[in-house]
Length: 212
Ligand SMILES: CC(C)(COP(=O)(O)OP(=O)(O)OC[C@H]1O[C@@H](n2cnc3c(N)ncnc32)[C@H](O)[C@@H]1OP(=O)(O)O)[C@@H](O)C(=O)NCCC(=O)NCCS
Image (cartoon, rainbow, N blue to C red; front, top):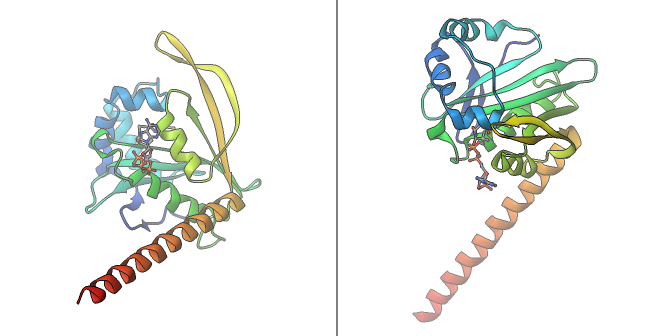
């Protein structure tokens, strides 16, 4: 399996997780909201986290990136795991540290990982399908995934215990063609926005010229 590559975006840089990330990953495991939203019920010792960070880059069938912004610090992570070379599919998961949410990092990181996942090998992974699951108590993540081309494929009713209550597990996936379509729609939207901005600027200039 190829090594986890560094991926450069406009906002974030994704780099392989390493031993230096253990402290921040350990802190993230102490965030009740994050644990609830990801449905994490397992508990880990600091020694397990140290060992995980030191060895995860060499594990087969997965790519684990630290999400960074304007430096090298681990702000969260995005992971492609369960990579299946036969069906060309994988599973995606991500989480950011509490102070880093809602800044656009998650959305850009997903887009970058999907670009890499669906790009032809050897530059990309040549995947056909990327799936994930999201809890029904997590509308922020679900809306974000939808906006990036993920489609709901099914719902495991009351499959997860959320404190006193149950919640559904929503199964979503994006296919390579869905991603290309989402990318093309995004490019068309950006082009229309810059065209509208150019027209508005030209009109402003014309008005200024009229005033003189
Ligand atoms: C889910 C998560 C990874 C998203 O990353 P992020 O960097 O916060 O996401 P972004 O800032 O790129 O985008 C969030 C989008 O959700 C929208 N949003 C925020 N709160 C929302 C809510 N309650 N309902 C619906 N949409 C919401 C934002 O408006 C934004 O959309 P926009 O880009 O159109 O403005 C991050 O919030 C996180 O780590 N949450 C805790 C762990 C988690 O839930 N992991 C996912 C498990 S499936």
